[in-house]
Length: 171
Image (cartoon, rainbow, N blue to C red; front, side, top):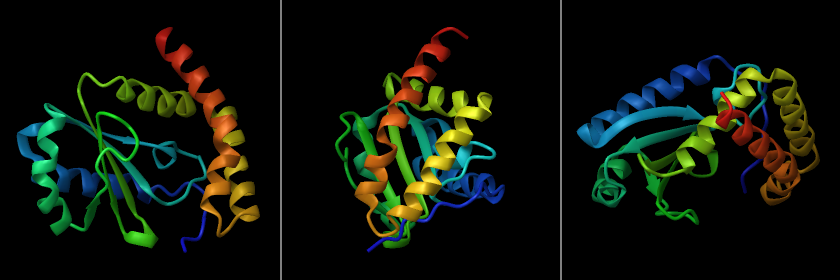
């Protein structure tokens, strides 16, 4: 059973992202167009579970399954699309997860949604604080119930996602 642990922002998360981004470039080579640090660990000052979310953008999502063995040799577990069509998802660390990898082809609209959410929180520290405070409260209330933790932050997450999308379209 995984413990839900939310921590204050840690500047080391940026270097942990960079190390894995370099590893992913070595695995996927020219298939990768770009790699983005997304999720809460990419927002300075935002409390977060210490799991680094990485979003590689690739030329052809249909070729990614060819790399599953190489990913496994680096400690990543393939989860396929994991509920999101057009994505390839990998986790690292088992019950002590350290990384989530969300891979999309360059034309997937999920890319813009993830970047808008990240950039909105980076430029709206009041919203980031509200989101972080909620996550801390939920982790304290549901330390061994990840489903309740996720459900508890869903409504605010959807609100931020909507605001971020509108904001992103107007910048």
